[in-house]
Length: 367
Image (cartoon, rainbow, N blue to C red; front, side, top):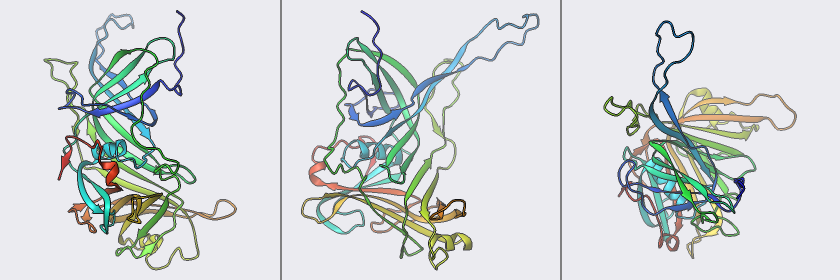
């Protein structure tokens, strides 16, 4: 039988993922993920090269030492109360459930709000990339022991917001798979999508969140300084569980257009010039309503304490003057609802009907 090329957009290509019972332990049930792409791969460190004299310039020996996997997984963060929450829960580490309230803590019977907070306890993931063709048997790249090294949430101008998770893990295993095995993504994709592509953005700043700021797009980047530890000589090829080596860093970049009030009191540019600490609160809503609550499915990105570290609006083209602003999130007291001190948290509101068959992070800290 001739070789058959595997195409990335065939229905037999797909990604599913789950949590593991302990680092690189037995996996739980897998969930299909409607993804945009992945760059996960295994890499090796090499033994040092010999410096012996008289080798005539050639390499006489070569050895492989520690292996690990690195890469990212990208997908559209639609509010389906399943995989999106699963990825947020793993990226942050802790999840709280607040029944019958919306993301701003207002009463909303029939709505569940999930609050995602940073916590050092993060279970490892197992991510499988299915690379099957329609005729011949294909294979699955299984990446075990995947620990979150940060994530990125980007809402590009005129585009659909997407989530990128960065991972460092233990190893890659290639598994055989019969052809015509379709990975079915979990979660509802309705006509309105709950995908936030038609989202209304409420972007508030100032120390009392009294200023509504108009934006065209934004990017939230969370860097978790995760590193793989050196292997012991007892087993030089055995990669150890990655660990944190520093403080996380949260930066947010926003794109807007310069207006006549760019230096008005409470405007981000005014705060940037004066070096004033501020706050930022972003609420994105879909066209889907949660039952009879009158509230929409929503994603809230809350930054209780920020410092603007970049602001510019150069005149370098015709038309509207583009303004770029960037801030760093700093630990501060959260409110509405209060969940302790955090520099960044995410809140997602969905219908309790969606939560009836949910699959959230199983071993992340719940409270």
